[in-house]
Length: 176
Image (cartoon, rainbow, N blue to C red):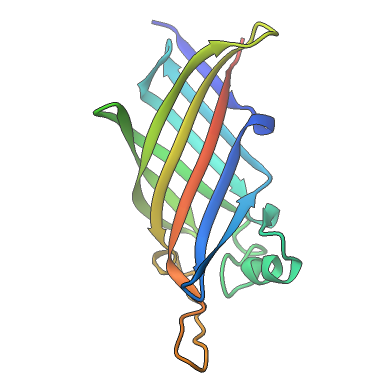
């Protein structure tokens, strides 16, 4: 079967993260510049080659001061480590959903993570393009990647949780 290359459609995709602030509310951020290439055998995603990168400098949480802090050496160190990377290794069916295992690299530290994947299906849009849709969710510990900044309030509340939730809505376009 022939190889098929798929590219992300950024106008119909989102790459988000969520972190607890003061352990009572959740702050959402996202990357506005990223790239994703998936190579499959035909339309079979279970043996896909998956390469994702996100530009750290494109991080946004809706607060300029917080975004600057996230890009600083306290967190992502954007000047030194311009991108985070994910390389998919294995996509396995698990009931009606899938589990995606891969290597996430942040600050030159690589850890294997597993994401839950919901496959939305494959359709042809009104312009004749074949598209595939996915929802991905998972959790990482930010300190595993040396995103170690910590603060505690006078009352002893942790300011930023160690757990980071990853949420992605991905639409891929089959390349000609």
